[in-house]
Image (cartoon, rainbow, N blue to C red; front, side, top):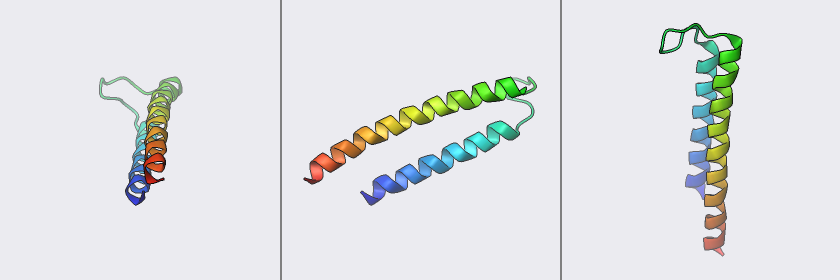
Amino acid sequence: MKVWWGINIAWLVLFIVGAIFLLNRRIDGAGTIQTPTVRMVSLAVLGGFFIFICLCQLIVLLFIKRKSK
């Protein structure tokens, strides 16, 4: 269970760093200027991925709790 919490903290730190990076960059990899709209879309994609990871982690938690009984 401690490993599970460690992995979740690592995911949280990774997403926070990713969000800070997306908000602070001025030009993306394709060379286009980042407008506030494009930044919000990028954060929405990152947020969707974050929700997917959270759902997967909750399923894993259910299996861990069921196995420990």
